[in-house]
Length: 324
Image 1 (cartoon, rainbow, N blue to C red):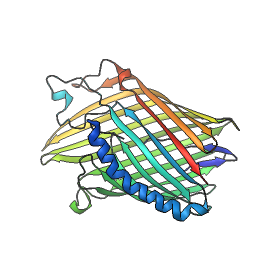
Image 2: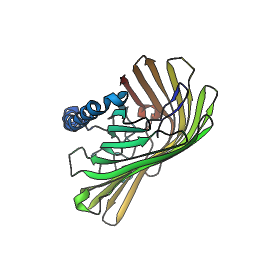
Image 3: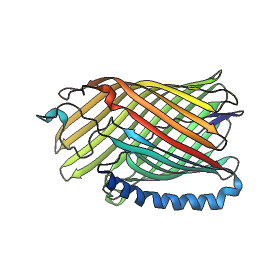
């Protein structure tokens, strides 16, 4: 979602985005090196050519998300004799974002994202910066952990706002392949609708978002991971105060379908969750930290819920730097 500014009070978009990494960690680190290099070069190119036009912002965040299906699992928990209970997997996730101004009304963003549903995403987009209407658009490439053929797609969004009163944003993305081999072997899709209200020293918002990834790890097997979240959030801020705090609460549904030929089985886990995120500004530096935890789990039979819901926590940390 495109950020909106009211006077000197910044309104930050919610980050949902996310980075799964297969264990052992050495393989994931090697993958990150291969993906980070082209993004780093793109960031240098953009910052070198566009820096005189405005500030350059670089943000790096990362963490662990335990509410994740094991990446190598191809048999449903409900069909397993020994592992009917859902078992979380410690995925490393994170974002690397490079943002800057092209003109007063036009901005760019280069991104590298990794999460427990879409895996690795490398992309770039342009966005407008209007008072009442914003739009963003750009291409992206989805990359699997095993460096399969990349999936090419487009992402975009639109936002309508009455500054200081209310805003509505709609965002989405989709790959163009899956049925066309030359465009990739998988299908990645996202969608989000968010509405928010400005209140004294706070911004209240409600959003519904979903992410899904369909791929064929074997000739006769199709896997589909999907996460849908219903989230209520409140951002607390004060003029000239360096800390912005956001509290989240909601319900999410994590599912994986296993389709062998014409036979399909689905593992599904619902969770009521709460979370908090803080951003502390020190001049051009912003320190970021967040934590999220499920309070109650409900697994669809015959899969069973884990004994300890709080073991499926998610946390992140990072920094954002602005260069003039």
